[in-house]
Image (cartoon, rainbow, N blue to C red; front, side, top):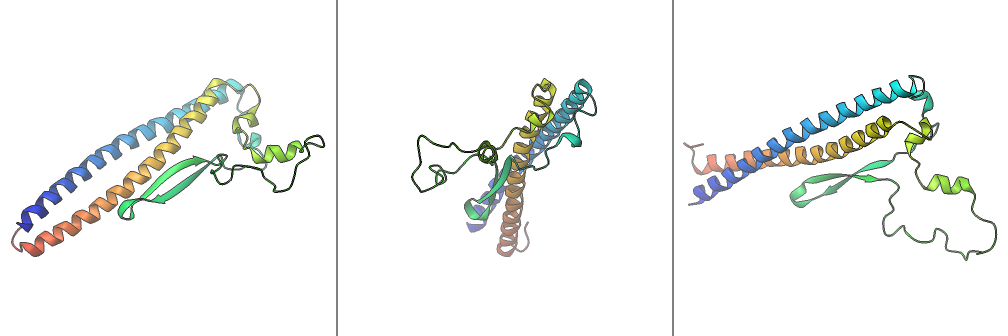
Length: 180
C-alpha cells in the first residue's frame, strides 16, 4: 500500500515538474522577445536622436540603482525572487526623517538633499523630450527584468522538484528492489 501512495505522489510531482518546465519555456521565450524588443527600440531611438545622443557619454557620473532584487524564503526552503523599486520605502521608514522639531516658517531644505532622496528617471540623462522609442525600450527592459526574477524563482522551484523526485525514486527502489 505504501508503494501505491509513493507512486501516486511521484506521479503528481512529475506532473507538477512538467508543468513548471512548460511554464519556464514560455517565460524564457517572452523574456527573449522583450529583450529583443528593447534593443530594437533602443536602436530606433539612436537613429532618431543621432548616435552620439544616446550612448555611454550621456550616462550620469553618479548612478544609483532604480530596482533591487529581493530574495525571500518560501515554504520548504524554496527561494522566491522579486524585483522591487529602490525608491519605495518600507512602512517602517515612512515618517519624519529627523526626530527634532521643525520650523514651519524658515529656511527650506536645499534642493540637493531632496534630489538625492528620490531616484531620478534615467531617461532624463538623454534630454527632456526623449523619443517614444526610448521610453518603449525602458519599459521592455523593465518587463524583462521582472520576467528574469520570475524565471529565477521558477528555476529554483524546478530544481527543488527534481531533488524531491530523485528522493521519491530512491524510496521506491528501497521498497521494491525489482521495480522502478
